[in-house]
Image (cartoon, rainbow, N blue to C red; front, side):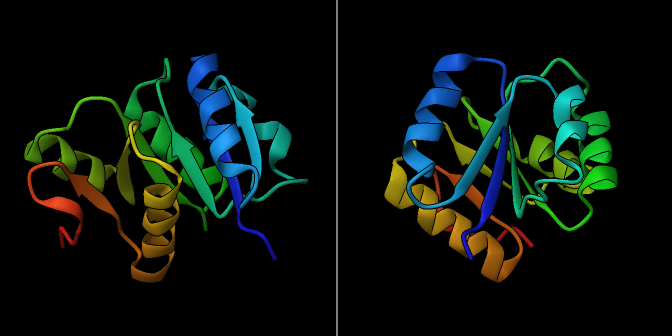
Length: 134
């Protein structure tokens, strides 16, 4: 069975790029704001939620996603590499990992497989493509 992914991102160009990259390998859905997530609660339970740019406070968004999809992994799509302090804050808030917006399909697939196997995924341009934080 194909993994199911929901992308929450308001920038259409990013959603289209992710859709074109992921739809061949994963069941893919997207929404532009987190409030729309309730339309999937019965029909599409995602394995992974990729959280892009949103208007809601990140901690509140994570709590909401955890409440609606308690078994889903949550990945934050980032444009600028976060500080170690920000990574730790987001782990405490419930993020399962980060992926940079510049990854290609091979890196994304490898990262998603790693996330599902190991439970946590982080990327750092300084330390390499994948590393365990905890």
